[in-house]
Length: 212
Image (cartoon, rainbow, N blue to C red; front, top):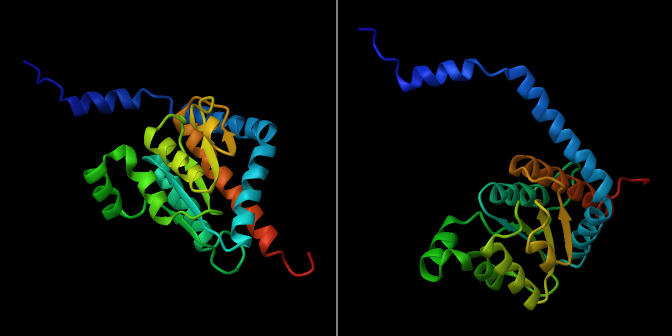
């Protein structure tokens, strides 16, 4: 009897049937289309978000960024560009990703519940005048929204980077940038693009080039 093909072999066969170049073109074209739509619909919101961040740094306040999963990675990316540098050489800026300390996250999650991790960290690190940047593809993450409520109660300004219509988060923050897509992957790609634009605007405002 012929030997049965392994699941791995069957998987290879299925993978080989995919038109990879067509899939690449489609995915990249869709990503570009979403960003073009973002440029047409969210310019004002992105500019307002950048203004909030710039104003906080100009007053020696801090920016606290947070989200779950891929949005946690985006939060750390955003904070790194600000604390390090984005483009030009300039002083460090006080940005903190609330997702970066695994001991904090696991201790709070264990003692208080995962839904409280970011709110508790806002209590620890947030001060009136700081800016909280909440990142969520759906806008409906309970722990993210709880942190925004805590931030507003403590006098922080709030920004939401969202998608899928904005969800609850878009109704809670001072400024919401809602990516016009229902695809988690496309939304996350756009969130990084938005973060980069904000970094660019912050540097141009606070550290203009000589003669600008």
